[in-house]
Length: 542
Image 1 (cartoon, helix red, strand yellow):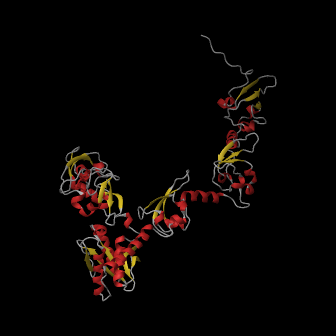
Image 2 (tube, one colour; image 1 turned 135 degrees about the horizontal axis):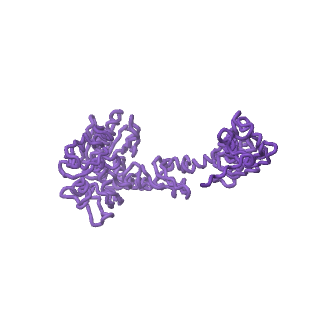
Image 3 (cartoon, helix red, strand yellow; image 1 turned 45 degrees about the vertical axis):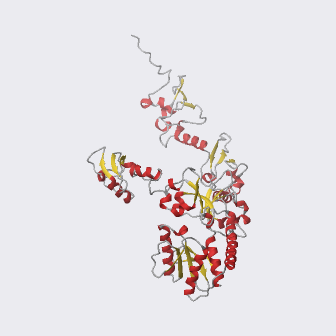
């Protein structure tokens, strides 16, 4: 907003500033609409949040700067201070509080003294017993346990599926993936192939929060629109999804696999599918099978990317798609996007690429590849080198700068690699840098010889303008041009400053003197004349 009345790039920010503007302290009476965006006027502001109302002074340009606009300082202090009553993690998110173990950043602070958006790194223990570090803000915003990712599965889902298979005799496929119209690939917790039934389990620890509700709603609507048979079982206490025609079932609270399996059994019996109650021995056997399946899942693929390409271990930096998942827990064909760092000391380039591109396609560092490809493309084929195409130019090559050992046979005639050349003229032998592309064809030659030729051409007169043409009487007295053997009056300009020797044209005068053509042709040819015939005047005395 460089001009008055012009709106900033973000209308929402401008509207907020208009609500918070109180007065212009530097120029009272000047309204905000009349101030340019770059104004340095200090203004009084009042926070627009209902629970704040704090007033402070700040320069307008600082509040609407593009990279880091400023806001209410009191709200900023609140976000970073200890929480007040009802603001702590323990008050707002008791479910997450149960997973808290200890604060790694500030050991003395716990859920009662931490805000939900704190950046303190803490240690957490998920309901499945995994212990991992994460910031409070990341956990509050929905990041779960990295070990529970299980390549699209969880230990809880394995237990429930094993119990349902044992009680119903149906085959269950875990982590079933489908690409619905207009969406990326979606994952469904369970799929019954014989029934064509999709089933999602929604415990609080992975489906709580408004963001997760919106995500589950969009996924369910897409599945229902595609005509799929989908059932969701949500933990008691979670809001129901606002999707018409969706069958909701509740389980819990908690993640007791036997209770969730019994809810699935109730749903299957309503569909007239077989179901039997399991005794203690059968339950134990089913949970043992689930434990074996989970151990295989968490352990990673039988043939991992690390087994196929162990050389990638030192280049691997991080997994962006599934943070915390390493090469030993990914199959060679995994499409997780990872960060890689080149091992070449002269490169150390970092780039993003899917794992499969490194393990299966064999792709390496892009920077090194570009340099290698450029070097290969710059090498000539048989009969295409500079030495073959232009031997005379090749004989002037001294070196290829930056490529020791290269000769004219390693260069293309149109190469852009800088080279050093030596003039073939024995009286010159000047050396200068230039690429072959600038010298090939009708290219440039020796710059020193060019300067001499230019100087010589400038010293020669135009046709009809030589000393011989304009002052033939003076030209008849020319004996020699010093430093230019063979030059005559036809090679001299009238205004030339070259030193010449002259001899008087009178037969009986022995006069001889030195002067330039410019000195002789002054005042219409009456400049410096023979000193014998025209001796210099002596200055008058007194």
